[in-house]
Image (cartoon, rainbow over all chains, first blue to last red; front, side, top):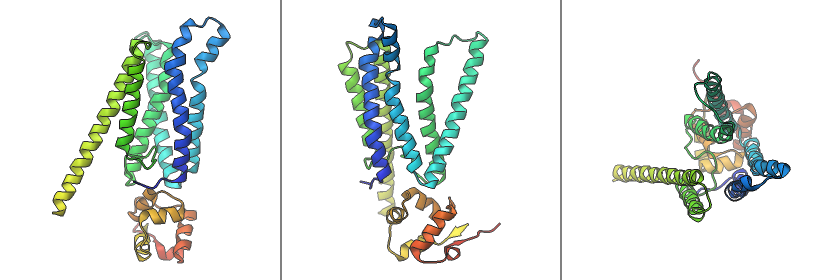
Amino acid sequence: MRKTRPIHQRYQREFWPAMLAYILIMFLLWPLLPQVHNELLKIALALLPVLPLLLVVRAMLRLVLGSDELEQRTHLIGLAIAATVVSTLSLAGGFLAAAGVIQLDGAVLIFVWPVLVVVYAAGRVWASRRYGGDVDVMCNNGIALHWRLLFAALVLAALAWFGRKQLPDYQLGILCGMSAAFAAWQLMLVIMFRRRRRRGDHEAS
Amino acid sequence: MNNHVRELRGEQSWSQADLAERLDVSRQTINAIETGKYDPSLPLAFKIARLFGRPIESIFVPGEE
C-alpha cells in the first residue's frame, strides 16, 4: 500500500462526506420537490444540493493550493482543457438551440459541473502522463484505484437496489449506468494489471 | 536541463518516495525531475541543493541548446 501524503488525506476527509451528503440529498430529498408548494421552500430545496458541492469545491481548492509545483501545473492544464471543452460545447449547443435545430431544456445546466469535473480529471491524467505520472492523479488515498472503483460501483448498485421502488426510472437508469461503468473500468484495470504482471514474470524468468 | 538528482539520491540510498517526503513534493515530481521531463523552479532547485549539501550548479547543468 502506498504512503498517503497529508494533503491527500485531508482531501479524502473533506471530499467524501460532502459527496455522500450530495448523493443522499439528490436521491432522498430532491425527489420530494414536486410535492413542495411553498415557493421559498421550493427554492431552498432546489438549491440544497449546491451546499455540499460548495464543500467539494473547497476541498478541491485546498488540494490544488496544497499541491507541489508540478501537480499545480497538471491541475492548470486539466482546468484549461476542461474550460475549453465545456465552453465550446456550451457555445455549440447555444448556437444550435438559437437556430432552432435542437430544443434545450434549462435543466441541461445541471450537467455542466459534472462534465467539467470529468474532463478536468481526464485532462489531468493526460498532463500527468506527459510528465511520467500514472492515471491515478485525482485522489491518492493509499488504496489501489481498482478497489475504489469497485467500492463506488457497489455503493451505486446498493443505492439503486434500495431505491428501486421510490426512484423514477431515469434516476435508476443513471445509478445502474454509473455502477456498470465503474465496474467495467475496475475490470479493465484489473485485466491490465494482471497482464502487466504476467508479462513482468515472463520477462524475469 | 540535465541533473544529477538520481545519482545523489542513490548515494544516500533513498527511494524516490523518501526524497519526495524530504522535499515535501510528490513522488511523481521527483520522477519527472530525474527523468528530465520537468525542470524544477528555482526555489525547489535550491531546496534540493541544500538537502544534498551541494552548490546548485553541480546538480543542475544546462542541456544542449
